[in-house]
Amino acid sequence: MLTLRQIRRKIIAAQKTKQITRTMQMVAASRVKKAEGRLQQAKPYAKKLEELLVRLSQTGQFSHPFFQAREVKSTGLIIVTSDRGLCGSYNTNIILKAESFLRNLNNNAKIVLLGKKGFDYFKKRDWEILDKVVDLGGKMDYKRVEDITDQITGYYLSGVVDEVYLLYTSFRSVLSYKPMIVKFLNVEAPEKSQGDKGLQYIFEPNVGEIFEKLLPKYVTTKIYISLAESFTSENAARMMAMKLATDNADDMITRLTLMRNKARQAAITKEITEIVTSAEALK
Image 1: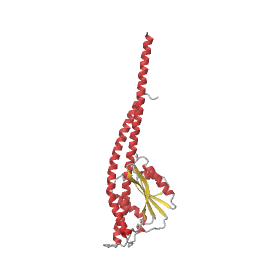
Image 2 (image 1 turned 60 degrees about the vertical axis):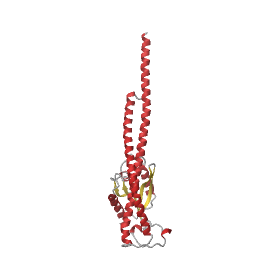
Image 3 (image 1 turned 30 degrees about the vertical axis):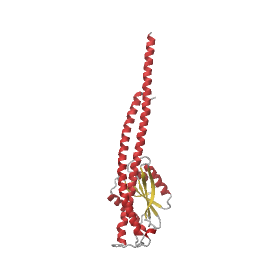
Image 4 (image 1 turned 30 degrees about the horizontal axis):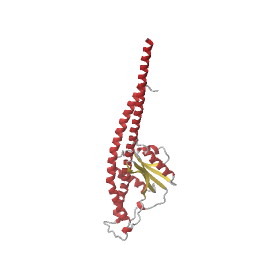
């Protein structure tokens, strides 16, 4: 049975914890809003770039290593996790999906880790780590993303891996985000749509030079959008985790307050009983 002093100390500790988690919840909520706005700004550019790639690819007048399918002897997987914790099951869900995918491969698997939590986990496992980035911190620096993309595409073009998949967290809403795996390289040429059938294009300067400029931007944008979705999902997960922690602290304070009141009432009743008993003994 806890004493009254011990209960009071626990209440004070729970109140301090509640203040911390509530502050972290508010910070995460602010970051979610900012990250979601950044994501919505980037999506139209990515959509238009993909639309342009689709239209150009339908001409059949180009050839690029990104579009060439190979015999797959080695598969690369880019895994996007967070650099910081306190975001509930966010990283656990990503790691479980990554492990399931890697175990089901019938060839040599190699991984690229974007996020400290992913590196902390996979550095103790058997899969070969081609590269790691553990200091992004949720910051969307396009030049940094471009450098990361160049490194990954370099592994593909040099034959270190024959195909590359990307594992990130798709953001749908603050309450809905899900890890998903998509094909990154090789780029699968889209089927020719009926609406573009028979259309003729004039290229200036030529198809090869246009694709030489367009494809690196396309793959960089794909990584950028995936990181933006992952960072938005991470902050949403952290906001919900801190909300749950705040609610739990509230429940604990309520229970401890009830215990304190009962203990105080018991102490008062005991004192009254002792006074009455002493008074009766003096008669």
